Amino acid sequence: MNEPETDQGLEAAAERLVKGQRAHPAPPGAAGDPRAHQVAAALAGQRRGREGAPAGLQRRVASLVSRELAQPSPVAGPAAPGHGSGGAGLTRRQWLTGTGAALAAGVAGIAVGELAARAPARTPPTTGGHRRESTLVPSEGIWRPVAAAERVVAGAAIPFVAGAVTGMLVRDPSGRILALSAICTHLGCRVRWVPASRQFLCPCHGASFTATGTFAGGPWGTAYPGGLPPLPRLRSRVTPDGMVEVLTAD
Amino acid sequence: MASASDPPGGPDGRDRDQARVVDRSVPDPRLPAVGAADRRRILAAAYVAEADAVYTFIVRRVGSVADAEDLTADTFLRALRGRSILDPSRVRGLLFTIARAVLAEHWARLYSEAPTPVGTLDQAPDGGPEGLPGSDADPDRLDRALDRRVTAVLASLPDNYRRVLELRFLEGCSVRETAKQMGLRPGNVRVLQMRALRRAAGLGSVLP
Image (cartoon, rainbow over all chains, first blue to last red):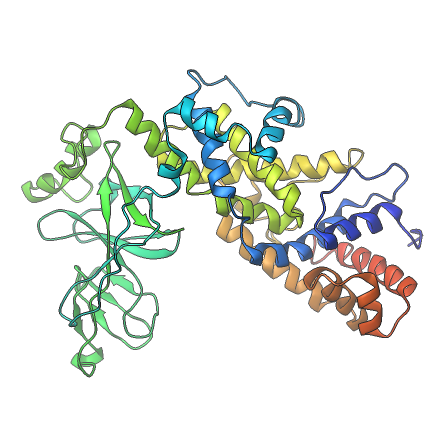
């Protein structure tokens, strides 16, 4: 290829990525290969992604969401025409400086803190005897919609992933929806639902659990020494819209 | 209403009893009566719950924290201002679909002369359904594809190319540090880094 040995634009972009700085438009005259820049971005992104979201991001999003939802009528069509930098620009600055957060929460009538942590704090359940069912209640919980309640029919288990938890929705014998952790209490593999036997089966060592999460025995009827704790229950509720929500940590 | 009176489980009486739980005319007794304000709260919570995931999805693709914060704000703004979504279960799909569009525009803006197709690093080699417009994006699947792609790109580079990219971008070393670690002069590191990025970008079989 006859590409120049140096590429000021790409080199500058690479340097900014390593230093964690904002990207700028590629200068005119640069070779301008976006794919090379994207490779550098994806590599730097591996590192940045592991660092997790910046502190306060969720709070800032909460204020933005409450402010926007407080607008009486949605604008028809996309908000920002063109490249999305027109109308969004001003709000972006508010977002960056953090102004308007308290204001917005007041306007919307939604306390930001309430959105960020809507669940009452509770002490973690003590692990007692194995027969006792435990309910997993995160200390900083948030209700997340996981499935339409009408999908949860008797004899089926609907898998879901919500924030930190992986679980299954089932109907208990009284017809109520039950949210169970799908993580085997033996060594942490994810259990599967076996419709034929209406049991959860752990693929790793064959432990099975009843439809309500109680330990039902090991493979070929063997009992684990001392049995296993039941699958933890998650707090769940059904919204008026018919959505099952599960209380989870992020 | 129709769905509540006609459960998929079957028309027998037992299932009808169970379906009553989801009947909108019979609110869940565990919930207090819900008005428009509560409805808005529930919807807002569904948006807020995705904040960190949307940011992480974006930062993994733009590599810069500041850009990712901006684009996260853009994503939420666009989702909310064009909002036709009042169903909390659809919020996640909507947000990630918009996030992908916002990312594509970000790249197109940076390289205004050469607009980039959506998700250059994301698409499955065979152009899977994820690349089709109109379908909700599945971020977990897209992230797995991205990781595979990054791993494959690194694995197919010559050792010194791979090393310079690892030191610079995965570990965040300066040119000087990288030069020291590789026993090169800083000028050589700059050239090597450019060659490595171009080679990685040109790996046609790996990067579509």
